[in-house]
Length: 104
Image (cartoon, rainbow, N blue to C red; front, top):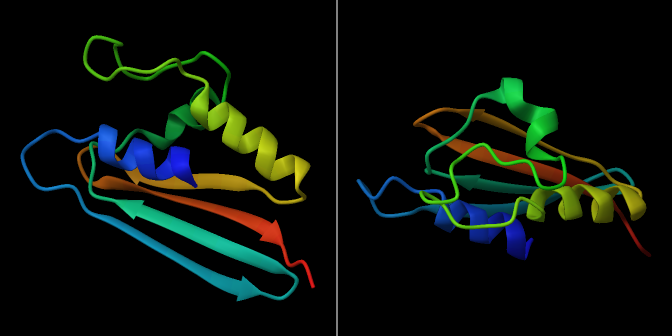
C-alpha cells in the first residue's frame, strides 16, 4: 500500500494538485483494494514491464526510483494469495487494484 500511494504522489506532472483515493471492498473471500490517482498515467501495453524488477517506464532524471517497488508489490500480493493489476491512460491517472484473502 505504501509503495502504491508513494507512486501516486511521485508520478505527477505538477500541473494540478495530487489526488489519491483509496478504498477497499470485500468480495466473497477476498478483499479488493483500490488506489486511484490523477497522475501522469501510463500505457497499459507496458503492464508486464511495470511489474518487472529494475524495469522503468520513465527516465530516472525525471522521476527517481530503482524500479523495484511494483515488482515487490506483485511478489508480496501473490505470496499472500492475491493478485494485482492496474488500468491507466497517459495523462489521466492510474487505478491500481489488488486482492488479498480474507483472514477470519
